[in-house]
Amino acid sequence: MTIIKSYKSQNLNGEILIPGDKSISHRALILSSCAVGRSTISNLLESEDVYSTLKALKILGVKIKKNKDNWHVYGNGLGSVAGFKGLLNLGNSGTGARLLMGLISGCEAEATFTGDESLSKRPMKRVIEPLLQSGSQIVSEDNSLPVTVKGSKIPLPINFSSKLSSAQVKSAVLISGLTSSGITNYYEPILSRDHTERMLKFMGAEIETINFQGKWKISMTGLPSLKNVDFKVPNDPSSASFPIVSTLITPNSKIHIKEVLMNELRIGFIKTLLEMGAKIDVINKKYSNGEKIADLIVNSSKLNAVDVPAERSSSMIDEYPILSIAASFANGTTTFNGVEELKYKETDRIIEVVNNLNKLGIKASSTKNKIIITGNNNKVVNGGIEIDSKLDHRIAMSFLCMGFFSNKPIIINRAQTIQTSFPNFFESMKKIGGNLVK
Ligand code: S3P
Image 1 (cartoon, helix red, strand yellow):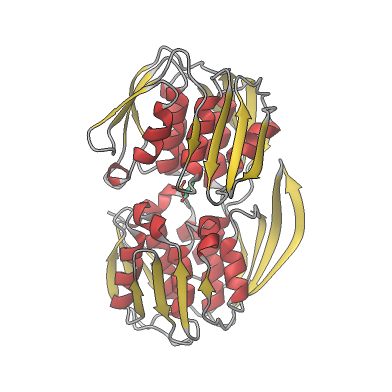
Image 2 (cartoon, helix red, strand yellow; image 1 turned 60 degrees about the horizontal axis):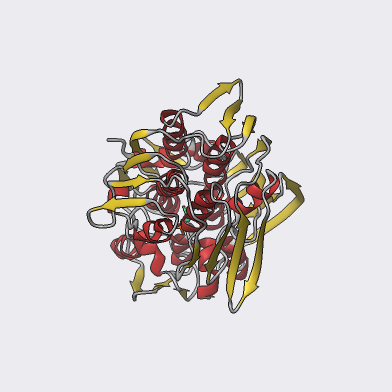
């Protein structure tokens, strides 16, 4: 077991390197395996979650090789995993598991999906229900892993209206629809991250998003000829959120982060932090492979409480744990609305955030869909507690960041889970002055 302790830090300064985006890395591997020919991916996130997807694709027969800093995926076209029958262990990765269920459901293949202790508790009904429409057979005892997907020989296009805004479900449906001969339609109440749509469009698929009767309708024409591509993965805003909040709460700090993905559907947390009074400058805005990117300059700031609307939750769904740390030091009571989906992440993040903040002396409570935190107006917390990550990388990193403004250290047990998304977190945070000890 890895234990990491975080101690009060003097100030954070300098440039921090942020790894490639996790969502885009999974998609770059999976979608380029559906193209014909060699795709080259640079700045792929080399973390455990992405390796789980990469290993699963290799087991499915896809040739993937690393050459210097680039990854080459030798795609064999749509439906090329047909004939496969076996086990795919996706470790901690919900994205890998759900997107690959979509891939299998659209091919004459059969895979049993398994995962670690955390992934095995996560709900799969949300993805099983729409994928059944493709004609595939899906077996699971209680709608959680292990799940066996027996794909359809002649996959039907799915027409599914989701109550959730989940990019994993949407992407599973679209990936399944690639091999069907009709139009796949997916509806969601609030637009979730659209990397799959952007990447498929970039590769030549016909795909459009419109507002239809109060919902977002995403339509894709099946059997596209997907071009092999050269793809540079932008840096992950979700990983950047940890040094950003650490800098805001640590006095006399200033950091610089380059080429962060600025997709509007991912940066609700920056919008929220700006509303709280955070000093974050967004400079050098440009486009890379159809996605917006920019550099960020972040300064320590005095933060005020905010009321974050439910409509924003999908664009900051992974950042609530670290934003809860920002809210703990703000002036006033912050309310995060519409957060019920946090219950289904790597842990029940509503419970983990509230319980751990309470242990640290911060007033926090929750209802089914709200987290309410009363900030201490910039007072150092006492610290001196141990927290089990419960295999949730974002809980581990968030509370380590809180330790930078604590009198006694905050100790995270099972901190190895950080490898899931931010393998160099320890070294990178130390380099800018974060007082972490293993
Ligand atoms: C992801 C979508 C989100 C997010 C997860 C990554 C993706 O999950 O929380 O970390 O890459 O599609 P949901 O689809 O469950 O909202």
